[in-house]
Image 1 (cartoon, rainbow, N blue to C red):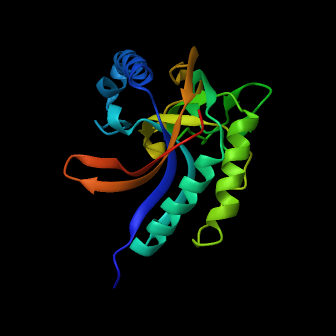
Image 2 (tube, rainbow, N blue to C red):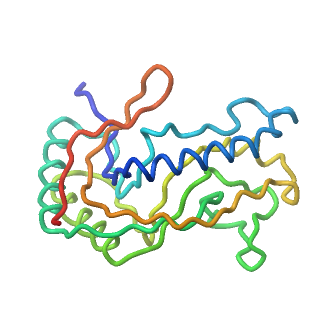
Length: 214
C-alpha cells in the first residue's frame, strides 16, 4: 500500500508573533493551573508548541507523494499571482462556537456544550478569502479532498481541550480567558505542510514554501 501523508496548506507566523503568543500561552497556563488541583488529568489542556503555531488555509487530508508534488506546483502557481497581505490577530478565546448549543445573545455555551480549543482569532479579509477560494479551485483539479465550505475566519490553535472532561465544569464556573489582541503581520509566503507524529507529539513540517508577490 502506498504511503500517504497528512497534508495542509498554511501560513507560517513571524518569529516575533510566535514569541508574543507563547507569552500569552504561559499566562494562560498559570491562570488555568488550578484545574489540575481539582482532579482534572494533566492532559485536559494540551498546549501547542511554538514551532507548530500557524494559520491553516486548507486541510487536504492524506495524500500520496504524487498528489503532494501536484499540490506544491498548484500552490506555487497561486502564490505567484497573489500579493502579500496583512493579517490582524484580534482575540484569544475558547473556540470554535458549537453549531448548536451556543447562545449568541448571552454569549455563553449552553449546558453540555464545551469548547474544543483555545485559539487566537483574526479579522476576516478579502485577501484571505480570495486566496482560499483560488487554492480550492486549482487544487480540486489534481487532488481529491473535501473543501471547507464555511466562511473563512483565520485562527491559530494555542491549545486543544479534552471536551468530555471540560463538560463536567459547570458553565458558570468555567474560566474566563478572553483577551483582546492587536497583532498585525504581513503574510509573505504560504506553505505546504505535513503533520507528522513523532516521539513527544505531532510536529508540522514545511514541505514547500511559496513566496507571494511583494
